[in-house]
Amino acid sequence: MSDEASKYHEEEQIGKTYDFRVVKRLLTYLKPYWHWVALALTLTLFTNVLVSLQPLFTKVAVDDFIVPKQVDGIWLFALAFFGVFLFRFLFSYTQEILLNKVGQMVMFDLRTEIFTKLQHQEVAYYDKYPVGRIVTRLTSDVDALNELFTSGVIDVLGDLVVIFAIIGMMFWLDWKLAIVSLITVPLLFASTNWFRKHARNGFDRVRTRNAKLNAFLQEYISGAQTLQLLNAEDKAQKRFHDINDDYRNANIETIYYYSIFYPLVDFIGAIGIAVVIFFFGYEYLSGMSSAGAGLTVGILASFIQYSLQLFQPIRDLSDKFNVLQAAIVASHRIFILLDLDIDIKSPLEPKKSGKAVGEIEFQNVWFAYKDEDWVIKDASFKVSVGESIALVGHTGSGKTTITNLLMRFYDVQKGRILLDGVDVKDWDLHDLRSNFAVVLQDVFLFSGSVENNIRLGNKEIARERIEWAAKEVHADEFIQNLQKTYEFEVRERGAGLSVGQKQLISFARALAFDPTILILDEATSSIDTETEQLIQQAVERVMDQRTSLVVAHRLSTIQKCDRILVFHHGELRESGTHNELLVLRGLYWRLYQLQYADENKQGKVANFTPPVLGV
Image 1 (cartoon, one colour):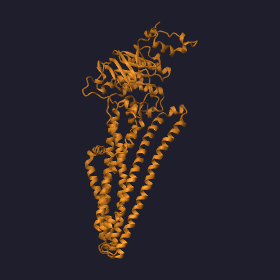
Image 2 (cartoon, one colour):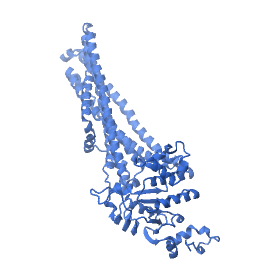
Image 3 (tube, rainbow, N blue to C red):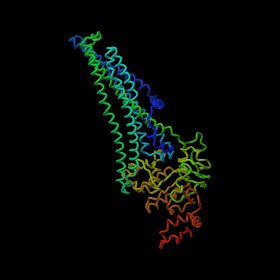
Image 4 (tube, rainbow, N blue to C red):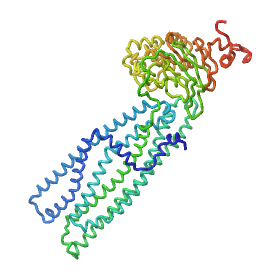
């Protein structure tokens, strides 16, 4: 499996490991809240010590009050018993509050760190990884760590305290009976180890299937319209059924181990209690040894309670180990994401920042998304300040890639891209991208008001400028008809608005930001003819005195550009004005001929001669 594939399937590649370096790293997230953790740990120790006192109270009650029928002092005994468990309740309550508060604070910090990392991750990362799996990092995996911090480490320490306290009390009361009580403990540890091993494997499968399910749901819910258009609902349903069934079976398999383990522990516990009763009866009733004389009914009652209490924390430890394993596997995935190198970032000492003038130059640029499968091959051209350039060519010829490289969504493998004479790699990344405004064919709108979708959180853009930009691109006409106008709540991905309306909002967004360089990528392809004419007027005003790159398949939209660059299989093959390229009768001429072949009344493409502007 290639490195890329192994990264893609990181759920399957983590494996089963207890990496204490990961545990150490996880504990660093507790450092800001160490005082709360220390208090919670102290309360846990006190609480569990108090738990171990309950059987001792039973012994005293039986031997000192019930058997001798002693009434004097029983109210003090009852008061002491009540006081111990009142403190246990208070300690336990405070501990739960502290641990859950710490857990939520840590989760907040971790989610913030992951989201910040994702915001700065280069676009290539999202080309490789499904969004559903990325969301799993922020949801299921973080929740697994929450369980570790709130009920994992502290409870493990508490269970260990209870185990040692119970064993100590049992040996203090009667060492022979204590040894008899511990006879079944090896059986309990063996069953616990069996359960831990199998449940851990099952839990890993559950998390893997959950990530796949999330990835599938994200993809198919986003593409619901395409599915219905192609009548592919049945195929999607079948595939979902298979993935969902796989997820269900993984959960059922895990439940199977739980259904065996817990009754088995109870059965082993019953065996232990039966052995204790048998030994006590033999020693106490037969009086065959001097040890029997020291045994009392109260000791028997306390040992039965201690035996039951001893099995509970041992059983819980197996669950806590699964919590620990789940947290380590989840943290591996999270840390893989957090430790990913961000290849595209601002240089430590940028050579250029601030507002650009708008001069662009590509110098012998080569670029491939993978290995040496070149998408751009030795491209060289220069765009002067205020010049409008059109990029044309067949699908896959590298037009959009050119704009992505310019904004440094990807870095070139060979050559250089200059903005104002400075390599884009030497620009401050934030300032570099702030010089661009992009209008895409597939417009993305966020949940929120129309105003916020135009402003995109930039409070420096005044309401007046937003309304001006909307009027310039004629978006104001339909916005005024919306309920609450600019305060109209846009639903997820702009649901409820037409494609044309969403594009008009994206044009208003571009104008409001007043970019140095404007990029239009098939920006008018989904707008009706009448609306397109209005937008073309606005676009011409915006492009005036502004460097512009226009990517378009519809050649009618770029004929007035200052220069047209024709790309073919990643190579810059032709450059010139619309008329110059038609006269050449090269690639551009053929593209133009194919696009307007329907104007030939006889339908003969070869006989069609496209018009030359001004001739």
